[in-house]
Length: 375
Image (tube, rainbow, N blue to C red; front, side, top):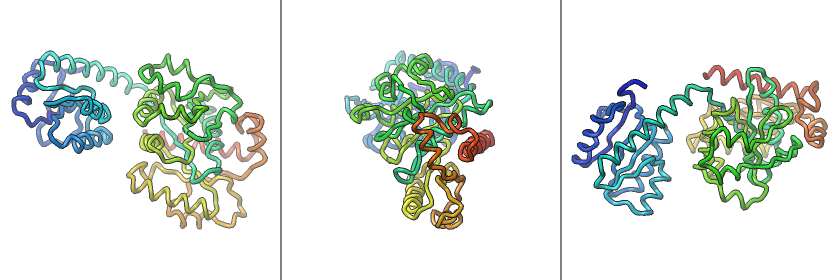
């Protein structure tokens, strides 16, 4: 790492405090203080809290979410449990209580440099793409699409590793589709969030015969209480360094966890079928995403499942109804799909020559091509 390549922003109102940090930064190598008026991204921001801490915490959260800043150290003249708890929720890596000892600041800066070196090393490796499969309503085939897309992706020679995560919190049944009995589920990860390294991930993953690594949802609803958006974010950040693609069965819910997943997804496949009820819900969801500000419109792909050439509603009419182009259509083959499910096999394993199987393979090729273009 070259000298003075870590950008740091001093958001400090107290002149003495600012002078203290500036003096220390002249002694610690590797940092370059940003100009006061710059809007460039910074690696680290030192933020002094004032009287409006709720607004300030929200501001910092937005800056972290938009990646305007990489990490944040908070400084406060008063630190209690409430401030500490909210600072952690806001994303603070350090919280200093005034008066601050120089040694304390130097120690925190050195730790930050270590994390930065590690991040640069990790960023040089391949980062996986998150494909989030969600439904316009229940029963539209979200799990069928997620399972068969994951298996089709892993069959591509250029994509050696695919994870399939069941985030359908109420009715997750991916293990039934693949006839596996995983020993662990993602609730086990919530209990061991500090151990999210490659060794730990490898120890909890269940691998299907196709080569897809599966992480199912909890068996009991009570275990869901152990998860929260921050934990899910940490988990996905760790696992997308381990896999080329992460396919998520997102179900139909829009709670805090599913919103976090939507925010982190590279592609969202919104599954619908060509009937009035589903298309109405699809249009409502698209409006909801637009109001939320994520996922971006270009990252949302509409998939028309169980499509029939003789459908009462034509694709063009559906596109007019939802005000968005249908990205892909999957033919209706209920018999083959149910038989494959009853056997606990993906379509590629159960009926490789069927039209619906070839359709999923083409979908995998199309999606991977799109992501390669983005790279």
